[in-house]
Length: 123
Image (cartoon, rainbow, N blue to C red; front, side, top):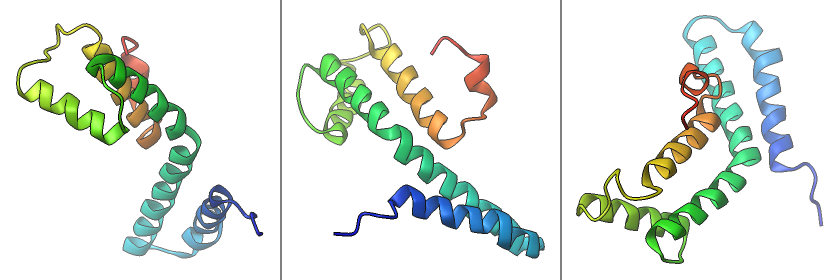
């Protein structure tokens, strides 16, 4: 069984190639698209590194809020349904904190240098 290189190593290798070899040789619109591709691969690496814990934490919060067990996407749909139907409001204990932490976790993966993460520590 071959287990090397890992998915993370493969993504890192492609990102490194784009940043160190390809991008210096490119210009204009093609250089822009190479930067976009390298950024997308950086997001993939952060998802591989961080989403397991943040997903597990989100699942625990959703189970506590809804009083149900289930998959993450299922419980998120249930939460949306309850909010849409007015069963949950920002006064619902734990809801605002859950929404804030879930948003922070997602932004940390997508845009870790986003200034709002540093400015708003209420999350």
